[in-house]
Amino acid sequence: MKRSSLDLLACPVCHHPLSLHPNLNDPIETGNLRCASCQKEYAIATGIPRFIDLPELSGFNRRFTGLYNWFSWFYRTFSKLAFAYIGMSEETGRREITDRLDPRGGRVLEVSIGPGVNLPYLVNRSDVGKIYGLDISLGQLQRCLSYIRRKGWGVELFLGNGEQLPFQDESFDGVFHVGGINFFNNKKAAIDEMIRVSKPGSRILIADETEKGARGYEKFIPGFKKSFNNKRNVIIPPIDLVPPEMLETHVFDVWKGWLYCLEFRKP
Image (tube, rainbow, N blue to C red; front, side, top):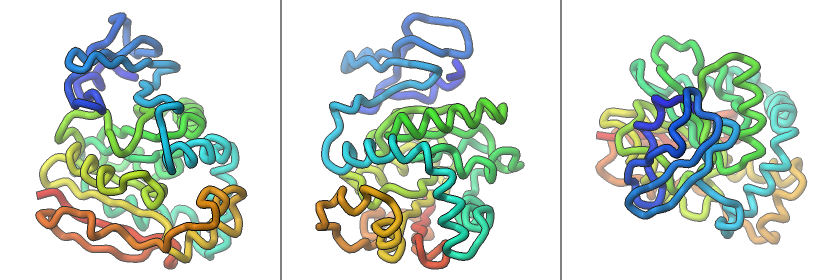
């Protein structure tokens, strides 16, 4: 983690600023972030601040963290096979979403960055500044860290819960999420958090499986169907959870109907 990122960070519980202990050189590989308000501390290991502990998670968040820790080893291969199955290139599919970001040269946050499969379509874009990624799965982040270090990309990574983002208000010029929110414990909290950390005028994109896509996952991903004890709710895009004051709110299909994309702009 770069020292310059400290000014963006906030306690995910109370949103107060964090201080670093000990005050080490840049880049920051180890240490602790401390909140003076609620006294919580968060460890930094291998350059990744860790804002959650697995034992503290519950419900779907806990179940899917375990699933994605395991799945992280096969995610890239599965992604390529999935795009071949639906009959489109991975680049075409991922650009269907990422090209809709409108950061105007500012910072971009990807919530649920996974192993970094969207990064090739953001890095070196003239309208994209610094890139930040958060995920609830340490396994996914470890795969992503190896990837960005191999590529030499200056992407900052954080272990955290999308329902409690560890960033200051109005920190990012573009925020997006691909895959996961359907099965968050609290989708409304996650949407509100993405809005909170976005600057006014920012476009926010939220994409996840449609019912068609979820049925495909049940067929091809071991453990996915079992995670719901065969009692999964039918998927409906959460457009009703977007506050009415948001602008340009609409939802549309991407990836040939296997995903929906919910898009809106913060006033």
